Length: 244
Length: 369
Image (tube, rainbow over all chains, first blue to last red; front, side, top):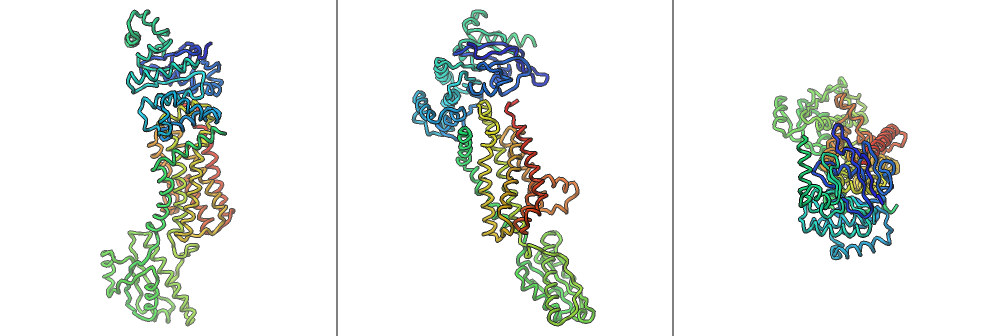
């Protein structure tokens, strides 16, 4: 079942084409890696899918709804974790979770229950009353992810969720992503860490606003006859440079 | 509805958990009103004056005594020579010199005319004009006394300044309405714009905008805490004005409250407008200080009379909401006039509120392009 569809989705800012007619599909439960160098247009593309930015042309569908016509219906079905770590630093751990639960309309009775079981799973129970600002970054990111999927959305969009933490912390973070995917939540994640790309079911690689490659990491490595995603990415990026 | 409550509660947490926000919101207004009311008082007490009195007769003695015995003046010295006048000013000890004409009493009796020259230090025009006005009034009072006692013809010393409503020129009468305008503007516009800009800066605004939270609710829940606190501030200022500065609420309290709420709406809308333009807290802060606070201080008539400004600034002053608010507060609070006296101010503020709210709501983008 397709949960995200993009057909010739384009975004222009004046003369600059940030996203150039991209076309792709994501199916339910998939972990879809959205790769690209800084400025390749991945954040802009994702923001269009989340309803934060209006496409210049093209069609996009998220959870079965058109991103132009039904952005409000899409919003109820997605979770979003922004590039900046975006929880309220001056709220306690459980207050943040309750806030996002409340905003997404999780029933009041269920909220407390979910907070407790979530914190237990994360091994955070002792930090329930801690102010978020005093948590280490890796924990904050895990918490932000948990807040983004607190209402059990169909799809969660993660915009470079693991910026600034070490590979070990990234690995822990990805455990959470796998758990979410196992529960049927589709994960759409942008990143420029190539070790993360290896964890995805399929990846697309954006270069200069276009999607230059789209396949599973294994197939891409075979196609470009290299050992790692790093090298795949390097080859594509070099292609972009050669044209300039 | 629950979304809204949860969100508003969060907003209160932000306020109550930040020490500086709390200080700005609750302590600063009190400090400001007390500072403006007591320290930066425009009234003058025990100003020192000198007298040059070539006549030295019954009338001049009496007038001098009258000035001296008022609480505003202390007689420093008698001058023996007009040449000394400039010297005492240069020493800076004296703020006013009273000069009587020669043969003062004799002239009054014979011609009904005598002159008093009041010399004040013009480098401080506010003080100077206040002092001159005081003395003129004292002389006029003396004149009235004399008429009653002996039926002498009136002197040709006339005071034309009338000091209605603020007979003792109490500074607090202008301070309280002014500071009220300033503080409400500060709390509503600055704090609202900064709190929205903070969410943009930290990226939480993005997360909220992706959520199904309707934009109207986002705005309302941002605005309601500051609205509530503004009402608290309004009552505090009023109470301090009445009990600490002896500025009574002569007019209708209800009318004053409604007027203030209207002004709060205007200020909130201005705050929203600023936050829809800027992206960082510091820009929001600068925008509200430069764009709102300074005009409110300089162009509202609080510090400098608008009538004395160059035409350009006079025109500019018309778009400063605080100017209309302060004028209306003076009418209601100090003069005790009714709603019919402030219809124009109400209309202007009402129009500003509607226009600003419409514009800022339109500018508050749900899509962050």
